[in-house]
Length: 408
Ligand SMILES: Nc1nc2c(ncn2[C@@H]2O[C@H](COP(=O)(O)OP(=O)(O)OP(=O)(O)O)[C@@H](O)[C@H]2O)c(=O)[nH]1
Ligand code: SF4
Ligand SMILES: [Mg+2]
Image 1 (spheres, helix red, strand yellow):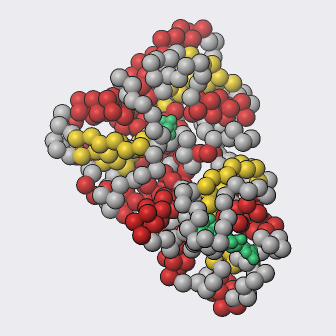
Image 2 (image 1 turned 30 degrees about the vertical axis):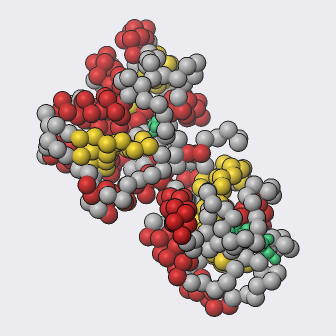
Image 3 (image 1 turned 90 degrees about the horizontal axis):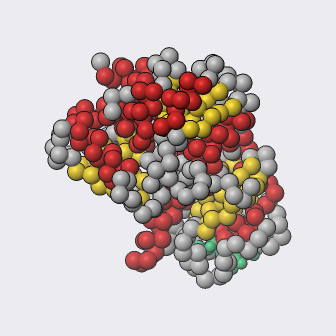
């Protein structure tokens, strides 16, 4: 279970001022000394992550952070890192060992703006008096308030229960990838190109997760390279319910798959699972307005060494330039950094985000919306610039309606 990818885990962030008892609380929750504890303020400098299994939720990721009241040049950098953790947090634990102040208020407001479930923990109750005013404040705001002591163990199991109660429904009943798109007992064909970008000796995460989802649904699948698709289809005595392709083979797969068979891409399936497919489809309308000199931000979640025909750096820019005929300017970012100057871009194109949790992508969508910048994803951009977006969205009728509404 420890091998479950981070992207599938419920992210629980532990926030608060320096010395509030955050690291002690993480250690108590996971029953291990994973984060260094000391009486010196500012002991935790970088986020400390600890994956574990928390039933009935399943795999979760606890993240201890640096204090939100840090100061100085390095302190500011630490606060930026802590803010990035908030971007991917599903449940926030605000820890305090003194009265509620501006730092906690600011944190709480940011959590409520993003609809992040929040739990307030008054730590060190073995030495700190119970704060009745804070308790009342939490009651008024409908916030869970728990007092804890790592010295006596008080409140720790109550906190675990509160986390379980606050877990979003989708973590307890995880949504499927394709299981609502095909009835049980049917066949899906997965098209997996084995090119230079394919990792040696294995399949990539979206492919593996889709196979697992198909098996969970009591369905079955056939996995082929794009060259073999036509032959594979010809051998079947009943057509597949769905063909899913890597976006890079879209055109060939669309040509080889009869029109009456549903066809889409892994990246579109993951736009739905890890982001908001409808918002990404709305973002596509920006493509038709692009003109020479416009800047486009390509956002890749993982750092990897680009290969010759890199999808984000080479193929998407090429297809978009061909589609628009404009001299577009592309910039690429990798990892959790998302720039503050988003308004400088005419479009943001997010990768499939298979390694990330949904919350972080929803935060990115929210940040783009705040400054009025359209955001879409790789698979949709490719399908749109190759003229096969309608076809690839046919398995999702309400999303197809949005596309058609925007293009009329
Ligand atoms: N008595 C008592 N002391 C505690 C408790 N929790 C933490 N402490 C002490 O408070 C100090 C700070 O604890 P940490 O867990 O390192 O606090 P932190 O919030 O992670 O601090 P930074 O990493 O500096 O931001 C340490 O000396 C801990 O031993 C508690 O429940 N009771
Ligand atoms: S860069 Fe994006 S799409 Fe590629 S592996 Fe990482 S998360 Fe998945
Ligand atoms: Mg700490």
